[in-house]
Image (tube, rainbow, N blue to C red; front, side, top):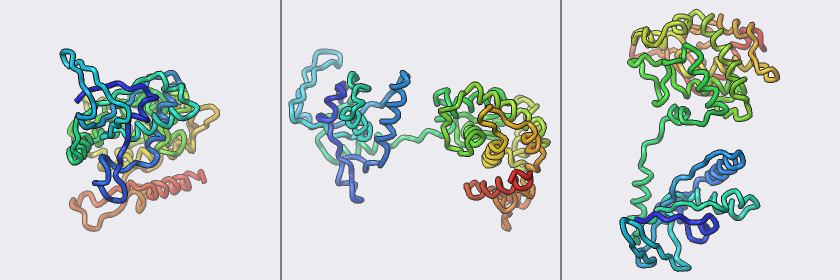
Length: 348
């Protein structure tokens, strides 16, 4: 392999993609094109560059028959790579990045990346089957858990508010899993950063996937921190876990809380967030204290009548007879639960 850097303007003519199509993997050297993915990369580049923020694209990988290029080695792995005109490099990995760069270069926004060079790892390989294997091997990586992606997100919008909430709301502080997909009760962890991110977005927009990029992180965080501290300190099932530190918690207490209280589950936090949205004043970036107090007085136990037959379902044949309930996480069940709570509170 050799590593080369190619000016943005030369990428479209030097690289060519050969994606598979028509349900035939052998029709190309890499996966079928994913509709919309190149546009997502372009939007990422536009957003970061126009805001003057750092950005990064992973190295593209391509292959070429070694007989079609010339390598002049100097020393210590340094060499001159001569690629004759008309020679194409076949993309093994990075077709969407190439497409995004290509479309930007041909657009009126070419100046955004015109002065940049992009790295290509060039594999000296002419066998089609080995190129397919190389793509498979490079793609065979373990996906990053959502909480870890959130934890490594930029400190703005949803991620910035989430990180602030975790630090300043004591029921989350040191009791939140920031790497794995689910909290480990044996480590006395109750939540994940992904749970809290959904709560944050629901509280401000009623949409768990909203990135909240237009919100002022400091003002929004202050408002939500104040309301969540009010809620968890006044809600009877959460008072103890709000006040106790992580070091004082026991595994049995965490397991009990998650078993009996809906607020120990991700679906409970989503419902709370959607109900907080009803108390949100977007003009003043604040939450109505009286409505927050009313929310804290609801029965948040799994046996609470508001959650029965929507997010809490009775299992006639439970594995554990002491736990005859199972949780439904689907959006339709959450909507029914939220509507029932709003009706009960007289908010509809």
